[in-house]
Length: 111
Length: 114
Image 1 (tube, rainbow over the protein chains, first blue to last red):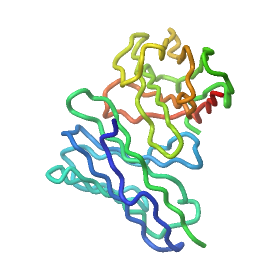
Image 2 (cartoon, chains in turn red, brown; image 1 turned 180 degrees about the vertical axis):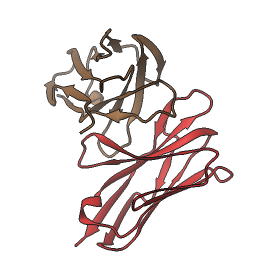
Image 3 (cartoon, rainbow over the protein chains, first blue to last red; image 1 turned 30 degrees about the vertical axis):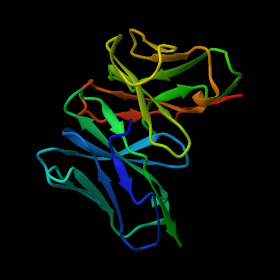
Image 4 (cartoon, helix red, strand yellow; image 1 turned 60 degrees about the horizontal axis):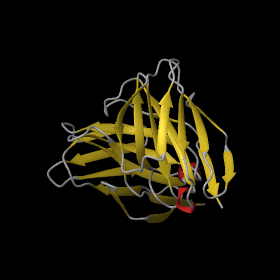
């Protein structure tokens, strides 16, 4: 079963706009990670945020974590065509330490 | 590129056959995790190996088995293939088995079962 659920399932925006994706999960976690996947290839790790952190930045990426609401968001600022990909959140559950992925958000950047 | 390699890239099998997929970890990594990703879905955890021992398993039947070798490379074996086994199989290596360590993914093996 999948612990994380991304929202929206698909998102199309104009190049240069900001893209926001959300992730909700069910059980207590140690940390949450965001990954990117291009066209059914391997996943690329973007950012990890620990349960005691609320916000983290990496270049054009901003991730927030609200453990009281069991949710996280990924913001990509000034989107580029190369950002077109699927984005997954993955949670590391406290109960068993195993990483569980959501179903992903498919992001399409329009020229 | 992450330094994690997988072989083969693509594979076509028929129902009932057996398949072995291979993964070479990134240098210095002692943990390998395997995932199954069906089309349009997120990766599903199959199992993890740490220092040649299975260190956790997802909801997959026993016909999914694995090995990790002394050089930390790994194999995923699937017996009695079923149509629903068609998927992208991903391996990921990390320095340690704790979830807080970043996982580095290989490009995957796409398995088609006819």
